[in-house]
Length: 303
Image (tube, rainbow, N blue to C red):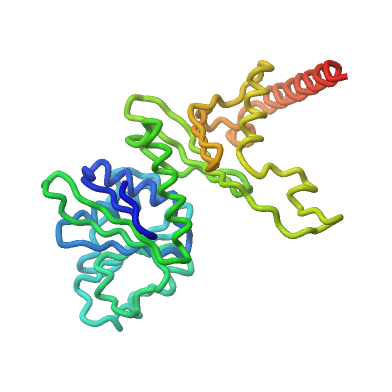
């Protein structure tokens, strides 16, 4: 990847690689975002948009018609709504008001093909993906850019891509995974060789303002400020014989981890699914008792 200020060039993307880039973008987007797709006819804009919407919806192969004639198609994935605009047939930029762009950005994101036809009415803050010919009919060149307020998020997206590429997971199917209430984000990666992993995206969190005795809340509550604590606890649990995710790869400085995927059978979901609560409660209590015994053993060794 060749980098310039606030933009990134990714050369010679095959169609699978373009779809993979769309999956990464789907992970990075938030409600209120605008993604402008630039490029000539046949450059791959609609291919990218479809892959992004499929990823957000969690339904590969779902029917996603081109909005060439309707100008806009709306979708309602679990995370947020998606409005897919195609402005090729827009007669004048003012017509954009009638298509509901402002409303779309209140409830979700907007993916806009032929954004140049919106003129000055295109939202000022936006991500842009430009696709162009690469000299081969089988590949396309891509340029990713962002306006200054969004540039840090684009930088994070590139760090994430660099990380999965470095460790051989760039060809993996990439899907958002619902996490907890922390600032961390998760994605499930399914490699074409059958391997699975979970990506943890957890950039270092700065201390907030002092709230008591000159200390920020994170220090008072002993919150983990980066992934080092997560890695240390996970390794300690595994060394003690407990079931905890293994670590496949890590970038501690950037807060990125590839960890073992233990599946979706978490305690709460199994109870909701009608599993026998007694078995689960016993397993949970046994684990807590074993953890207490391990802590006591460590305390004895330290004293």
